[in-house]
Image 1 (cartoon, rainbow, N blue to C red):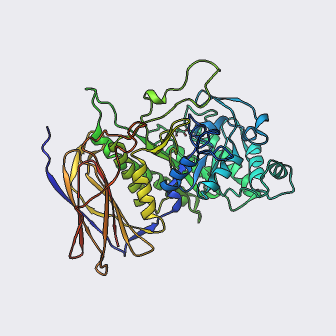
Image 2: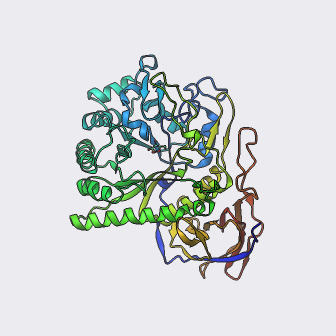
Image 3: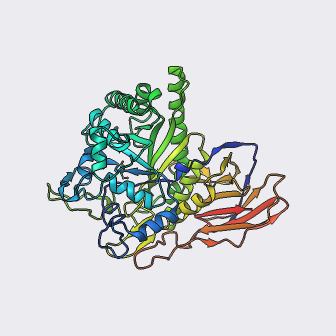
Amino acid sequence: MTQQTETHAKLVVDDEFKVGPVHDRVFGSFVEHLGRCVYTGIYEPGHPTADEEGFRQDVIDLVKELGATTIRYPGGNFVSGYNWEDGVGPKQDRPRRLDLAWHSTETNQFGLHEMASWLRKAGGNELMEAVNLGTRGLAEALDLLEYANVPEGTARSEERIRNGAEDPFDIRMWCLGNEMDGPWQTGHKSAEDYGKLAASVAAGMRMIDPDLELVVCGSSSHTMDTFGKWEEIVLEHTFDKVNFVSAHAYYFPQIMPDGSRDMASFLASGVDMDGFIKDVGAAIDATRSRLKSDHNVYISFDEWNVWYMGEEPSKNPEGIGNWPVAPRLLEDIYSVADAVVVGDLLITLLQNADRVHAASLAQLVNVIAPIMTEPNGPAWRQTTFYPFSLTAAWAKGGSVLEPKIESPQYHTDRYGDVASTNAVAVRGADGSVSVFVTNRSLDDECTFDIKLPGDFTPHEIEARTLHDDDILAANTLHDQHRVEPYTNDSASMHSGTVSVTLPPVSWTAIQIR
Ligand code: AHR
């Protein structure tokens, strides 16, 4: 057994050093036509809680509680083979199609109109729409934009009105394809080919509406061989025409030669995400100065999460054709350790608020998701639900302060020595200070001190911690409330400093009012 020791860490909260506003869009999520995210996830006609459109009310309630904002749709890898026209018009006329990405049969019973309507019901969340630049191109992207955003009087806008949407969907944020650097992507392209295509699609879309916010595909991961070069070439082609470059990152504890999992490195995944953001930021700056551009491009971290990629739940159905409808795919069950990593990644996204103006937790329901459902059964919160929902609830509307942290270190095989405490402070519009912090150490409890600004007189502290002595504990269908955040009673105040005890492998949110 490892000896538990007590360590100390400190965060200085200083209003003079702001990183930037907390962007609402950082609390985005992602609904892909993949597995049971849509079908029997958000949409299940006949479910006891379903409304007249087939939307599960139990899921809508949880999505509202989660605090998700912008929702990326309809993919993901799925979008690179998708005909958006298949998902509009009378449902009985919509075709069944092969979904090449996930070896599934797409029934198209849910499409753009259903998504727009679901978003209104789920709290008025913003739609972030992806266009297919895998099997399709400029013409189809323009058709979709005309269909979605032109008020009336053209073939596509009138078609939308006939299909039941009098008002345009007015979609502001558009992804120019998905992970086009990935050899797994239908219609995968070289950086040169994709850069040229994305530039022409962006230019065309801006002819219809110059104020759209466009996201060009960055590398699909920090570890791609083409990482960096891809960003350079693609941004060179598109810089002045786009607002965002995307970044995607998934983490899981690697299996070591002795069969155990490398939990120490996994808990420090935020170190990699931070480096990834800095690297993409450098590529943006280099391109900007090379092109002598006054324009700026930000990062849309539009896929991030823990994902046990390549393991059993993520294996595609086999065979040729006759693929199942909405199979159970990527249904990872998240542990306490996974939730601590998710909380840590969210801290990292906030710390980089100057660069990262949008992000999407991938995904929302059933598929590597904070919310799980059973067909005709209940919906429940995974462990990862809590760091997301509490951070969203306390950080939205605030300003991120530069994190000045003194932390002990611990050793990881993957990243060397890293800080065992990761934290960020947010000054709320109401004057409160919220701090989000992880103790990444597998062994040590940490006394965490927050030094408050001199003029701040705290009256009340609330501290909520997610931890369990069993770091693999999870919420399941049969034990839906096994892991929940608890009030951390150790929080105390003395002469301008708040102290909280952080158990090993834990995530904590502290609000000081
Ligand atoms: O989120 C699951 C998949 O991960 C997405 O479809 C794809 O874009 C990424 O590789």
